[in-house]
Image 1 (cartoon, one colour):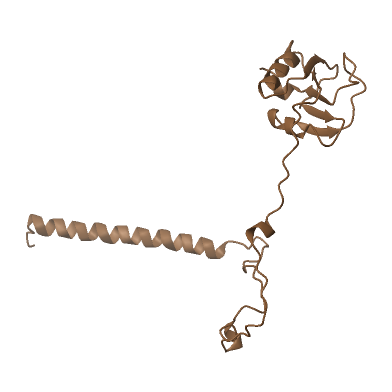
Image 2 (cartoon, rainbow, N blue to C red):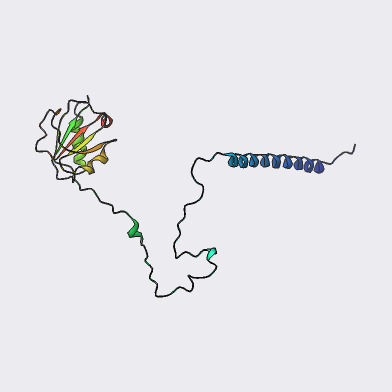
Length: 188
């Protein structure tokens, strides 16, 4: 048996390691490829959605109709402003008379929320209690034009148009908005 030099032994081991690594890479890519091919169809079409317009040149037409189009043809262009939905900003309820009701066992929670809302510019607030526990805060407005801006300050709050006639320790008459603080907004 012939004795190999250190350099020859190194290259021999390097070549073997390279072949093993390449074999592993090929097997991994093969498994990934097969899993992609064998994956069941989720019921959705894999064909991309396309639209066709008379102004689209296709290979089937066989001529350059768009290059030699009649200049008298009119084209309607759609701008970005035409396709965007109109965003309506909610009317801010800064001037509304707001009653904040605490439906939790946490003492003083309605008063704390009055202070918090005051920091956001809602200064015409009063605090009282609500006798039926609520999981989430409810914002109830007497008019659909106000109160929606208040929902953002609470966790999972709902917005309603109507009046609160029962369950409050104070009459809700004369208030534009009643906020019933739920358990999700406790722990201030």
